[in-house]
Length: 236
Image (tube, rainbow, N blue to C red; front, side, top):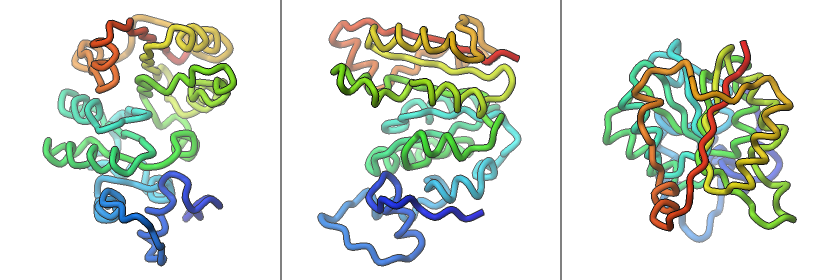
């Protein structure tokens, strides 16, 4: 069913929704990436497009689906898609530059099992069918380090509650962060939900065995910051 875009016309992804609906939108200054995004209809999906077409946005929609939250410039989406043709990969981000560059990376690699969605990750995760995801990758979400900003952290109770519904039986979440306090907070939250912290995932070696060092991971490593990694598996 077609879903109207949310009330805020400037919320992530909503301008693209309006432009693709042939609405008149006055945008100043000119945004090159937004206008490129209009034409990436086979790679880049808005919230209503994703809701209407998922999982048939993929050439082989029956393959298990991995969701990367905060795909940045598409490094992990493209690498995971190339190394794991038995999976479909959906990357999500809120910035037009990031999603357009992710799509361009996918095009260069000629991948048919990788797609991108633009918008708020909470909204996009919420509209996906229950039990439709095999895995969720959350690499270096914003730690919102000031105490008064901690309420904005993505990996909160609502995320784990929603993820539990969206993951298939035995599905998993793979988390990386450079922030030790955030990492410990996540461990405490996981215990409230139907998940188990594990070092064994139901995945082929090419996915688990690769480092998937994102831009942020490489940046933190150059600063000699430790990387904290967590595998969480949904109980069957």
